[in-house]
Image 1: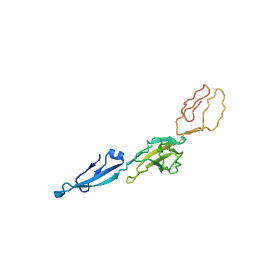
Image 2: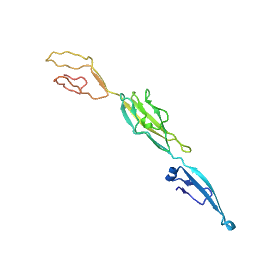
Image 3: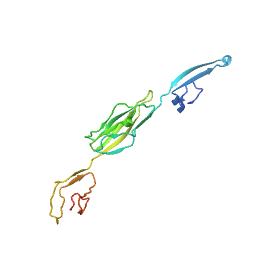
Image 4: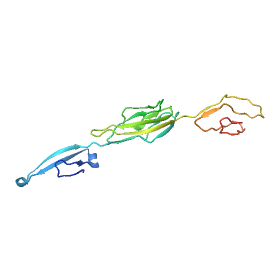
Amino acid sequence: TGTYDNATAENPIYTASTQDVSAGVVTLTKTVTGTGACASSTVSASIALTISEEPTVEAGAAASLCSDAGPYTLSDATIGGGATMGTWSLTTSPATGDGVLSSTTATATPETVTFTATVPGDYILTLTSDFTAPCVAVTDTVTITVEDEPTVAVTSPTATICFDDMFTVAGSTSTNGTIAWTTSGTGTYDNATAENPIY
């Protein structure tokens, strides 16, 4: 059901339709009708045109992960059109990045591949389709940003005060998060979100 740019030309251009793509093969026939004394004669020749569907690929949406998150499944990935397989690769990493893909071989289910990294920074993953000639492979990328997990430390896990004294926390540290001090007792903090409050 495709169309010619000029169906009476010697060598026209044929544009395939979506139905042609679904069919896979269409027959193009050139018919020549004689003139003059040969007006009742016709001859024809045909071309079997195989149409390969263009591959499509989608690597999925960008994501942000904590460095302690463990394996992240690339579940948004899809392949389609003429593609039957997809291959993941890690194309960009931070300077000391440690990102690892669970598979870097062609797979029919790229959405089941996982990515793991603990070093903070941006990782760019590329999903590449397979193809049937004369079509070519297509690619898409997704950025995975890994962020530092929070840390916390206190100078000493034990301390002693007299009942009517206040205890000033000293030397405690934390990074990459918000602070919330709690108690197993019923006392109060002067600021329960401070790095080193008074209790």
